[in-house]
Length: 143
Ligand SMILES: [Zn+2]
Image 1 (tube, rainbow, N blue to C red):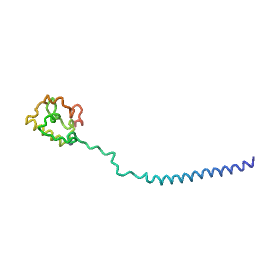
Image 2 (cartoon, helix red, strand yellow):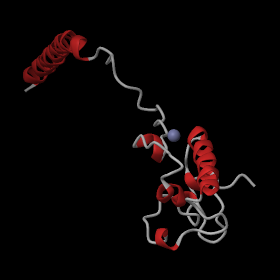
Image 3 (cartoon, rainbow, N blue to C red):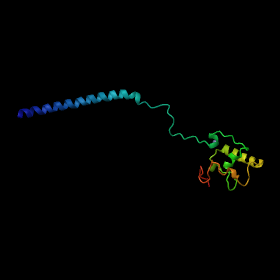
C-alpha cells in the first residue's frame, strides 16, 4: 500500500498535468482557428442606412402632388371651418408653409370669384371626408 501511495501521487500529478496541458493547447488552437474564421464576418457593416434618421415630413398635398386651384371649391372647403368659414391654421391642417400659403390665397380668390361662401361652408360639402380635424390637431397650438 505504501508503495502504491507513493506511486499514485506521482501518477495523479502527471495525469493532471496531461489533462490540463492538453485542453490549454486545444483551446489555444481553437481560439486561433475561430479568430481566423471570424475575421471575415466581424468586419463592420458598410453602406447601411442610418437607423436614427428622422422620417421626412410630407403634407397631404405634397404627398399626392395635388394642384391647388381656386376653381376646386370642394378641395378648398376641406380647409375651412364649417362654423366660421375661416381657414384652419397649419397646426390643424398639417400642411407645409408653402402649400398653406397657396391654399389661403386660393381660398380668398375662390371667395372673391364666388365659388366659396365667406362666412360659412356650403351644405353640400359637409359630408365630405375630412382632411383635417380641429379636434385632433397635427401639432399643438403654440399659445
Ligand atoms: Zn407640403
